[in-house]
View (cartoon, rainbow, N blue to C red):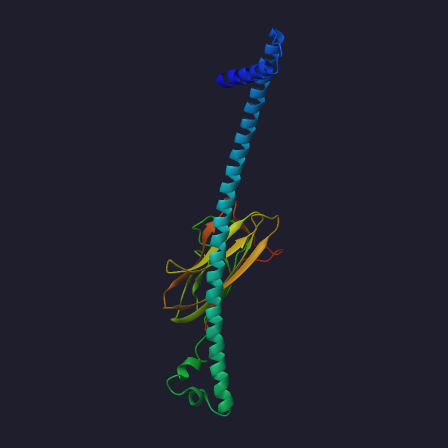
Length: 260
């Protein structure tokens, strides 16, 4: 009301300076004009407030999405780092062995590596192999904390895999390689992890949340186990409608492992 009075006095002052005679109709017209301007200002302020709220909401959404992507990137970097370390180790292993063969083409393994290192290259061919391969028989919904039960047992040399609870129990001590494949359904984000005795060894991320398509991820981990250690694939993260595809048309989710 005070702002309206100031505006009217401003108009009256202009009229006085210009020598204009003020009539009642003029005064009423100016009062109506000020009222209309105040209403327009109020409407504009309301629209600005709505826009501010929308901008704030979008900023919060962008921050949340950015944090999620940063987490995914950090997981990928860690997985890449571990895979590179494994590849470097295997490359050095092969290089050393090849160098020994070139220098002594007719020598046996112990002559190439020396008696101490010979056991690194020897394999007991009389020992039965230890390996397994299993599949998920059908598509299913997944929840965080869920252990994936691959119920189609294709191969189990060493009798280590239990298709009832999804847990592989190492039948022998040694170094093992594990691999698992997951195909996410549309609008799904799933983090699956290889877990040994309750400890996460590595994590794989499959993300089709923002597209109308399926995405597949395959991961591999090399780990030293002691006889009796438990190994499983667990869901360590998932959105509300998470689900995995496993059928004959798109391929089946799998979990495999072998002792090297």
